[in-house]
Length: 324
Image (tube, rainbow, N blue to C red):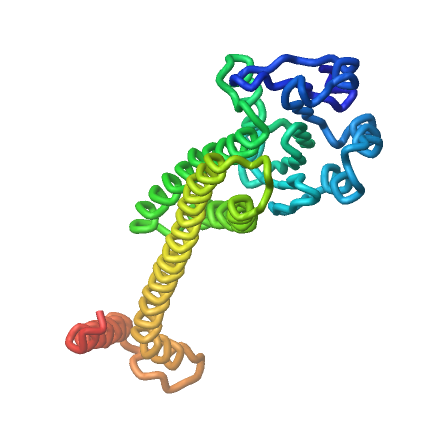
């Protein structure tokens, strides 16, 4: 299909894992007995929006849902039709994974309409599996498989976060430099953003299992529970990443505080040693008559020796008190 028209895919499922591509004219002539129809649209295209607004199968809530910007994951059913908004990690080149891509699904058992604004690899996976004859055989299977693929593709992203966090944990033991703190902030931000969308997605998957929709087959409902369990593990991993990042941050703050205290303590000791020495040198440096030893050529050496002796006595006192 021509993506410029907003219609990315128009496929008719054959019920055996395969699908046949349809032209725009064939889509207009499609009938339910031909097989499940899957229309995949780019909702940022004016042509796609116009088609959605004039599709007789869709009522006003569904039309607004399919073209809504930045929808949070949720599930709603209207007249035995399913409205499902899901999010997947952005795995497109030169993109941030936490910039999650939303996909909107409308399905009534015989027609599936999905809308996106950016390419989503999970959608491409399903399209490829249909070309190979190993794709979903019904609308029910399609919804569950898309949910499963979206969640499965989150795994590598979470593994990367965990590996980065493990490296930072090792670095934290020996350093607390600004680079480590910046990397830690990045990981915490990614974990927070990912969890922000996965938590409502979990609730949507729970509702998918409980929703009374006639065309949603029982085996697919059971599969949805497995998908939800997989999603819960991802959320638990994100919670673990956030907690570990918080612990590392506390360790960094503690290390920096210890370094600062150590340096301030050293400066305090140096100041304590040089305070009496500075007082004596200042006292004997005043330019007035009567300064002792001003006429002796050994006075300077004697004075320096006295200062050195005072410094040694102070150092010995600090060591005895275990201040050094």
